[in-house]
Amino acid sequence: MPSRNPHFAKFHSGYLFPEITKRKNAFLQEEPSAHLIYLGIGDTTSPLPEVIVKAVKEEAHALGTTQGYTGYGPEQGSFLLRQAIADQFYQGNISPEEIFLSDGSKCDIGRLQILFGKQSRIAVQDPTYPVYVDTAVGMGISQEYAPSSQHYAGITYMKCTPENHFFPDLTQLPDLDLLFFCSPNNPTGAVASYKQLQELIAVAKQKNAFLIFDSAYAAFIQDPHLPKSIYEIPGAKDVAIELSSFSKIVGFTGVRLGWSVVPKELLFSGGESVHKDWNRLHSTYFNGASNLAQAGGLAALSKEGITAMQKLCMEYLENASLLKNCLQSLGYPVFGGEHIPYLFVDVRPKTSWAAFEEFLHTYHLVTTPGSGFGPAGEGFLRFSAFAKRSFILEAIGRL
Image (cartoon, rainbow, N blue to C red; front, side, top):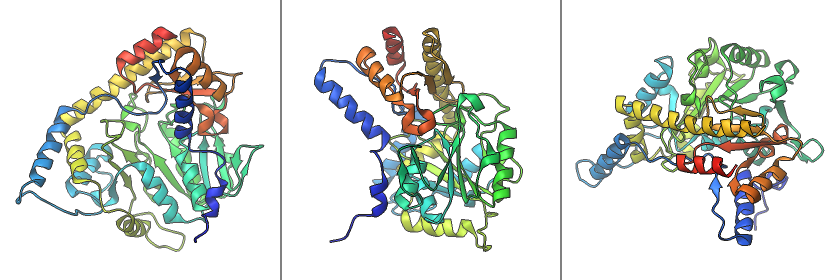
């Protein structure tokens, strides 16, 4: 009988969102008649735009005909969709061959950990999306969890708090191989400026490291002076990989479609092509995104689809604005909400989980503890504004 992967024994707790579900279910056992409003997980709630529904239906119908049926497609994805992504999000600065379609950026994060191996030295924002850390732990990149610091040894945590405007002190970084950075940031809502991204690129080059840039929420950015892609920064193609997704911007959380960008300029220390190895790994671990999802993605990037995407993004940002105004009126310092439908709410001196329980038991609202995104998130709650407008208004009424 095989033994357990020893790295899985390092996990000090369950993944954040199943833990929230566990506590929610325990509460519902105590109060089964309670009507909960979910402002925790960032799951979209608005229906798919009609232009996308029509395209998926047409693709499904074609698959039911002899003439229209297709089986396996290219593992990298439809060339037409990759071209559309290159044109819409990168203005031709990235070629379709450098774009790899997937079923979402979460899986790409895990596959990147496999690509670079357990010898990699990584740095992550603190707080940030927990998948960066958890996939590293599962790969054996980290050492043991230290309860005193709430850090995994072997991972560098870049503290991002209101005190430093949610941007880390890059001068204190040790030698690295991979630097994970998310902008707009989940959970803080912070968006890196052009100058800050220049600094990240400069540090990556200085450290001979790669920057893994997560732009999953970039379409929500409203300020035209704020970069939406790392490739807007000169020199980024030499050191940066970008991950993105259709999940939040057109409601594909269940449909599943994302992409990675691996420029051909990227080289390992020995001069080998990162693009070539990523193509090899991607083709081995993944059979290609669903042709139905890809049909929907292509429709999302049509003229009508872009209009629908922008409308959806504004709908969720308006939710965030309503909720932010309410929480601020109650005296809470609130961050985010302008360029991402997340609010990062300062509940100190309460702990994150204590505040979570208070909002759950008092107002019947499910939120997300900031401490679940890293130790620097302690004393904060993340509110998701992806709920339906009627639920946002009801939540405001309860508060």
